[in-house]
Length: 362
Image (cartoon, rainbow, N blue to C red; front, top):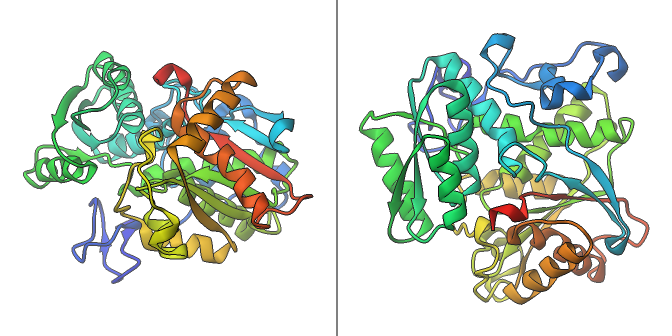
């Protein structure tokens, strides 16, 4: 029994959702060795598994489903007065590989022989690729209008693709029906706690890059919250271990028309529009909404919505500066200026912005 419902307290051995409907969490968060961070002998050549002491999966190295992912570069971005973490430098071209390596490791540990996932593209490609690495059959449910480049990545990994007409929520419902019917193990990037344990490694890398200090603020794209919540849990774990002294301000960037977190904080009038450019975060009902709002409150953070015009313009700016990202990536750099204008980011604040996906993915 190593999964627990934070809402009702029920424990499980292996389940994707509590009977009460809430997402599950691991009961015990591994702790690093006592002493200083240097005692842990972090080696960047091990990628994100260099932080194995913080991961609740993969205790046995032979169970790890890995392609050498992690420890992505951090580079100065003077035009934004920030540091970019290049999360598109991954085997499948997006930060979702962090969650995929942990999730497929968990699937291997529990003996899954077939997995399913629902995704608008990047998570599906990552899960399909790591399933292939693990030798586990995969089926990925995608929106009917998903970009063909992302579908190709899923198919080339040997996974079956199921196109679903309707909204992004309809895609999830169709996938959950398959799980409920007992067809496969649910490798969900929105529900599976292993996925968030994987994305938390981004926070460990940022701190290690900076000699165990944390920035003043981290600005991230925000859809289902896999990066956002992972960052929060990672920075919190570092503070609890005594390796850092605080958690940075976490700032979300959502797509106008798909911004439930920003609407909750600032009202519906602040999120009007239809941002069709940032297709990777078009999520109206994030599973982890309550947890995202808690993370924002705990870090004195915020979330705002960006228009398609602002994101399209920012994408061109990124490309011209040498950062070849996909469109969704542009929401976070675009948000930096907005946050500065509002005084949420001070002029002398140290800011990190993860760039989440490669331009090769469309």
